Image (cartoon, rainbow, N blue to C red):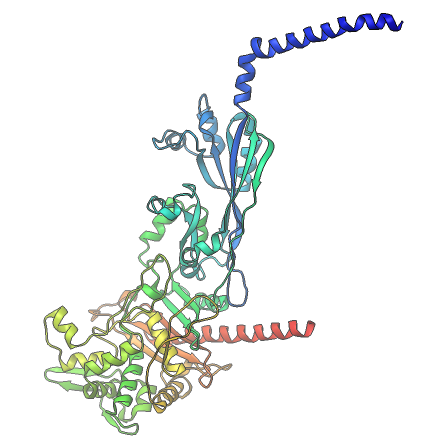
Length: 589
């Protein structure tokens, strides 16, 4: 029996060899072309793995942004033949003509997948995945997008993500990015993009002809971006947005002892979520054609006459230069005459005999005409520029460039207007009108310097602050006199901002009304005066200084001061809440 089996073995081996050879011939010769095609359709795909972007927090660790998946659908170039354009158009919800334009662009690479649609919803992703097998080479990619839970609140400051523009793509730093990569395009998102972005990972995977993953060959994990703690308090931003209502304007709040920006709001604003999801033409047209210019950052890009808030500078200059005694009085009868011109006071009946403190509290124009006459424009220019007006603050807020404002002097008028400087020009400049113009952020820095004794800080959005960049040499009594008078503006019955005194803190401030040139005889909101209010609080131990500007708001006392009050109270309540939170954590530990 054993011998019989031994004789059969060679025949069995021969039979198996024949079967093997036949199968090999069938695979290589008979069906060679078929399997070669199938083999070629197994591809190595390199898939970029997006890095989670760093989170932007406010000063109290409240997240101002959220990372969310951002879906897009692409197709590999080798799968474009024999594609059913009508069905693909219906699946993606894109017009057939638009789809054909994307697929037939001259600059399409034969090696790079073509991105057909971005910002897909979860429903669209599910629909595409369900019909994935009908369109070989069609696949969904996931990137890291942004969601802005506070919408328009603080949008000019926080910014948004957007696709790389053609101009940016020529930047050597950005050339290695995919053409449709999302990067910071505005505000903090743009300014600190390198810090927030992180490093993308990479997967090398083998897929079949249908685009299905067969196996992972190699993977490099993404590196998460770094978080940022901003100096702003979102509670102030929300309070400001609510307080402004439908009015246009700006608010800038600063921590006087560090230069930290506590709030920067420009209104009207825009919703950054529309940009991060891929802004459509209709919304972009709405933004660009809006006469109130929501894309304009009024806090740093708009300059206006500061009105009576500028009287703070004129008063400081007069005290420092010794041209007025604290108790010396000027008689205000409602205006003064100079040549054929009459320069009126806002109070037509006049203030009577009035000294410096009361002139600030009641904002007497005639008193400050007299100070301007005694000082001359060059000395007013000297102190205004020392307090940061008429020059850039150095604030960085991409892609915006701040405006410098203007503090005129005799030389400027000769050069720009080819005219001499007149005393009437000085009168008008001394009360913050005429050629004088400032930005809201400059006014906030000026108020912070008054509050802290003359220190100018480089403004910053990062919690931690800066050292003083400049110090103005002032007599201690000058600051004391001015701070006391500004306290009276808000807290004394005859003060112009008495209606905005606070029950939870002591405010000091100055109202201002900036005239709209050429408005005489005209009615309507766009011909109304602009409203200003600059303030600091608490008066005795200041922790916040700010400026409020309301475009065509009317009077500073009624339009701007109430907004400042709400912003300051929101900050005080936020500080109290943070202290209680810290005490609670300490007790638990």
